[in-house]
Image (tube, rainbow, N blue to C red; front, side):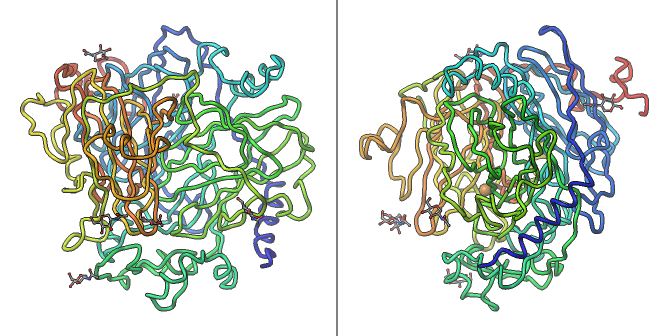
Amino acid sequence: MAFSRLLAVFSYLSLALLSTAAPSSIPHSLDRRADDVVNFEVTLTWEDYAPIGGSPRKMIMTNGTFPGPPLKLKVGQSVEFLVHNQLPDPTTIHFHGIVQQGTPWSDGVPGLTQPAIPPGSSYLYKWTADASGVYFYHAHFRSQIMDGLYGAIIIAPESKDDKPFSLINDDPEFQDLMSAADDELQPVFISDFNKYTSAELHRQEQSANIDFACADAILVNGKGSQLCLTRDELTAYTSPKLVPLLAAVSPSEITDKGCLPPNLPATQGNFTFNIDSLPSDAYFECTPSSGETEVINVDGEKGFAALTFINPGGYELLKFTIDGHRMWVYGADGGYITPQLVDTVAVNNGDRYSVLIELNQAPADYAIRVANSGLNQVISGFGVLRYKGSSGPASEDPNALAGMDFAGGNLTVLVPFNENLAAPYPPSPPSPTADVTYQMNIKKLGQPGGAYEWTLSGVNPFSPNLEDQTPLLYTDPSNVAESDLILKTTNGTWVDLVIKTQGPLAQPHPMHKHSNKAYVLGKGVGNWTWNTVAEAAAALPSTAFNFQNPPLRDGYTTTPNERNNTWMVLRYQVVNPGAFLFHCHVQTHMFGGMAVAMLDGVDEWPEVPAEYADGNGMSLKKLAKKGKLHPKQ
Ligand SMILES: *[C@@H]1O[C@H](CO)[C@@H](O)[C@H](O)[C@H]1NC(C)=O
Ligand SMILES: *[C@@H]1O[C@H](CO)[C@@H](O)[C@H](O)[C@H]1NC(C)=O
Ligand SMILES: *[C@@H]1O[C@H](CO)[C@@H](O)[C@H](O)[C@H]1NC(C)=O
Ligand SMILES: *[C@@H]1O[C@H](CO)[C@@H](O)[C@H](O)[C@H]1NC(C)=O
Ligand SMILES: *[C@@H]1O[C@H](CO)[C@@H](O)[C@H](O)[C@H]1NC(C)=O
Ligand SMILES: *[C@@H]1O[C@H](CO)[C@@H](O)[C@H](O)[C@H]1NC(C)=O
Ligand SMILES: [Cu+2]
């Protein structure tokens, strides 16, 4: 098909860029000694904002910005993060991927590690930057992350010797260039965006009885546009896999917004829908609007640039390409990995990937293309990689250098990042055996539950109301009954989590474990019928599991499959006693109940410091006494 319209869309963006160059500047200069305490202070406000143009919606601003300001640190530093909640709702802040070794009360999960911070109150999080890498802070109350509360955390390593660049090039000069690029790495948040607040969206789910998954735009560092296609383009971009499923609805087509209709039994399940209750623009009507386009500035003379892509989005699993450039993926979820030279990387919700780009092209503007990688919607967003001294768009035809189209389909042969080969660098093998195995079974609850209700355990949903209970961390675990939603582990033990996903149409669920990383030992299609990994390993081909150098991640996505159940096995050692959530990072799924609480190390349960254990976090009064209040308060 002709890409004339997309071409038009992108030329428009390119032209707009020339006049509205808005370099993303990141404050540097946290040049402190490693034993210093680094103080951050942010104020959260609820404001009208229109990142994609058009009518504004209410969003959470962190210190007046979206995304929030980046936190720059060095390994070993202690952090004090003071947050003032001036929102109309309670909130908490989670530091995604930060281990919280010895500080489980700063993990930011309401009902597990703290009570939510009431409107008008402040809270002081204290933790240590134990490991280098890129992490991010985000809201963890209900689905507030979708209202805009997120920002990067960048922790510099102790020494450049820790970096895996000798595996890319054995010339020390090149390694120095790569290391210098890494020292200046720029975070690139890519995420879905909705014109409705997360609370409005959940109300729509409940009244229409649907599992919501239809975005208005894909943002790059909080900027983007709502791009609408013609019906011909939508038809051309509809995956052939979907055509038989769409026969169940009338009209048998994806919506004007490029979404699978919300009343599709094949994806939603056997439910009675009330889609007339949805506002017409929730799924159907597409109204184009344009906001700014993010420009990432790089300097060709430096030889390399380093970017870390982060997906803080609500439900869209994404992937990206950069016109005219391949990239070395050298980090995943904060840890260094054996580098891979690729053309495209899938970034699922909660995940971070660090890439090095060799700046060997003419100084120009190159499109960063971000497409949905799921089947739920045809949608893309765009940013620009701009060389210093850029002469403008790299090519007159804006799609001449494109690796993928608006629907994420490849236009040339693309080498994708292979997460299964992302061995940690330096190598760090898991224990060959585990002490205990927990099995979970992801599925919708089914009627009489709603189409938006899920279980991770396979039995009950982890209801959002559990966020309002007394934090599990504040309770002696011997007084807490173990259940399908509350699991207990012993400190020092190795734990296997077997996550089964029920098909048909098993979806990819980007799971996230709080506190520790876990090894991804294996993933498979079909029924898991064993009691332990050892039993499964004896029955399956030796390629089914990797016990030698499996990926070590804090995000792990279940294998999707159209016809069968699937499974995934994670292994971790309990080293940090506390109450930690294990959940799907798709916000609608988490809100729908896809979570369990792990009481890790119940035999070494930590004593919660008095300043938190009073059940009220740090009260305003105490903060005032300590002189920690922002003058505005
Ligand atoms: C947030 O704004 C306050 C007041 O201007 C400032 O003191 C603080 O450093 C800012 N926080 C961050 C993390 O940049
Ligand atoms: C769908 O649900 C209805 C009502 O609960 C039930 O009668 C029907 O058998 C179900 N259909 C399928 C295909 O499971
Ligand atoms: C997309 O990639 C596949 C291989 O991964 C290749 O066979 C195919 O030709 C590519 N499509 C296009 C349009 O180049
Ligand atoms: C928990 O176990 C780990 C690993 O064996 C150990 O390093 C740590 O000290 C233990 N923690 C406590 C509080 O005993
Ligand atoms: C998996 O189990 C289900 C029911 O438990 C069965 O219907 C299905 O055929 C099994 N699938 C395979 C591939 O064996
Ligand atoms: C589902 O499982 C069956 C039995 O293992 C297998 O024959 C079939 O190819 C699988 N289907 C898919 C889509 O993987
Ligand atoms: Cu999920």
